[in-house]
Image (cartoon, rainbow, N blue to C red; front, side, top):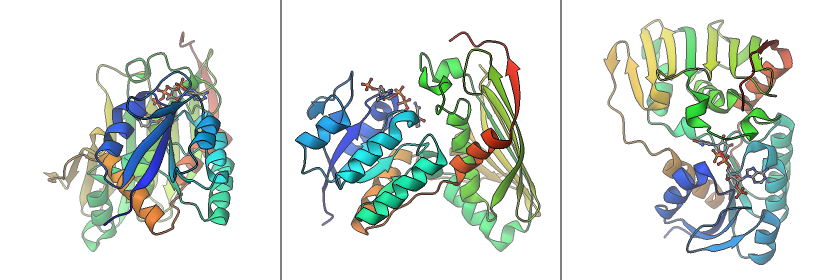
Length: 312
Ligand code: NAP
């Protein structure tokens, strides 16, 4: 029988309620014991104001899942690792690449699991897409185009942290596309140029264009835009010698050379908790910073364009 790990969840907001709590409830390998959130509580478990109170009062916890915004991820993860807990990070795994690398180092030195989760990689189209692109059937990859266009007012109503430093702006959803691209392509990709369009009243971009190149020379272009709606798009097209592979709806649909591919049911967060359990059981870490590094490179090299105030 699989071991059951005692789990605490920190940061009870939209994603914790929509996805984490139901996925944990359905996962027999974890028992939700306690939560920490400044303004929210979860019925049926013990609740604390913050992670320090949680760690102090619950020494028997095995693992912590962090669901607050990225700006507070490092301090929370550090506290959990220093208490000897296994840690799962929501995406993005931190507000900077160096934070995540430091956490990884601490986790390894303490023998704790650190899992930097990328929920979009668990979307049902991703593994079939990766397998086809890795196979001989696909031939060479010629070009990749990403279009991630949505209405920020629909998906992030009232959320201020996305507009603050470390909040990533349009890269908050855009990094999901980058997590898929870096998973499915059989080549590494390097950022060559970027444009970041930022409203005059925010610290983070509302739109971004990234021009990358794969190590086989194929161009990889990504356009992220938060000024769309009601028509939204979460699309990735990969042109190969054998035709076009298209991912739609953020990974819910896949077609290859014009043919729709039948996919399994959507189970992003249940799959993440299965993976977290497996990592703890096998004493491993899983920390892939490549999507965050591409975002960091865009901030490092990008041309900055100011646009009209967002009015947040
Ligand atoms: P959220 O609802 O705005 O924030 C989650 C909770 O974190 C808040 O309710 C708040 O609870 C706590 N929090 C906020 N600021 C904090 C701070 N400065 N210090 C400590 N706690 C703070 O955000 P969310 O949409 O759930 O997103 C959280 C993370 O999940 C982000 O990294 C996001 O990229 C990721 N994610 C979100 C979605 C989505 O659809 N929303 C999807 C996938 C991944 P208290 O006030 O009670 O402390």
